[in-house]
Image: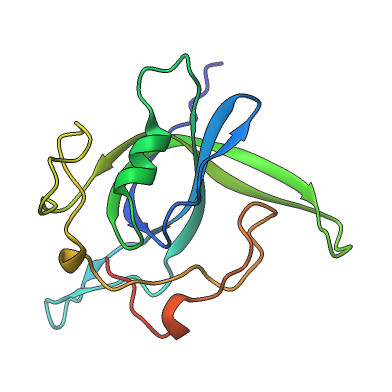
Length: 170
């Protein structure tokens, strides 16, 4: 029986991507991504944001054998609040809780492809040859942070950005 493990999402970065690290000769960059569903209110006709967005941990890898360097693209062009389209696959991480809480696990997305969404960035020659570029800092929507819960050893808790209470800009 054939199987398929493919994820396609549009959302926003909840924070700047973490600096790339070397893991067995392969560079990796980690970031958190938020997705939600907007829906039209039947009474008012206005679009409303999802009150329960999903916060997803993501990783992108680059080895010398790959032609396209996603790690460099993400580090250079992606910032907190930026809208992105990502494609990838689900992967299960498992670890022992460092506070003696037993075995923990979570799903994350291993990113294979990204597309930058939004307007052109002023003073920049484009978006790394991807067909779209990162929006100017003034065009970015309000920022938001991850939910207050344990996201595993690679994504420590950091709480909501800016003191919380900010809307998610979907």
